Structure formats: structure tokens, C-alpha cells
Length: 105
Image 1 (spheres, rainbow, N blue to C red):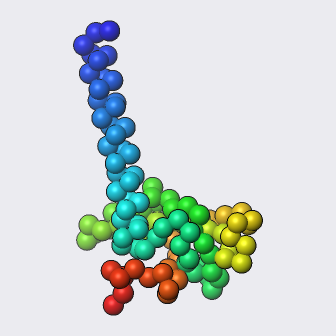
Image 2: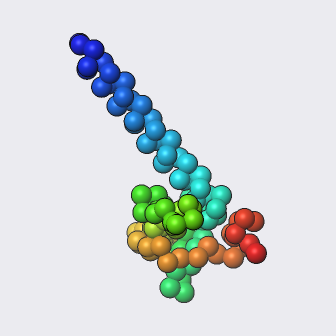
């Protein structure tokens, strides 16, 4: 193995670690800023859902430096364990009982 291959492998490992760290930071951002956790209750189009997944790749950087809401997939609250998750997009609100202190006015 020559020097170039060695440097490439080290850099690829560092890039992969940085990508994993960024993913975790975005999940933490969703939890603390938006109040989202796995199994949080949200409302979308007048219906209630349980969060099944959060698409942090859908988050965009806003002009003020913050991030936009992530796209969510959720299952209806009346059958959260048996229903297929539905893509709900970014137009959702956290159920009132689950609103984090940082989001309350």
C-alpha cells in the first residue's frame, strides 16, 4: 500500500465519521427544537399520527442559520403498530401535549 492509498483511507474514514456526527446532530436538533422523537404524536391535515421516521436530509438551512422542519413519515394514532407509515411531508404540527418547552410561547 502506498502513501496515497493510506491517506485516502484515513480521509474516507474521517468523512464517514463526520457524516455520522452530522446526522446525529440533526436528530438532536429535531428532538430539542421541534420536540420530535420516535413515537411522538403529530397532527397533519386534521389527523393525528405517531412519528415513525424523520428525514433529516430534507432539512434545509434557513437565512437565519436555523434549519427547516424535516419531512416526517407517520402512522395513524388509531393503529400505530399495524398501519403502514405514510409520508406526511413538512406541513405538520407537534401535538399540543407533546410540545417542547423551547417551542412554547
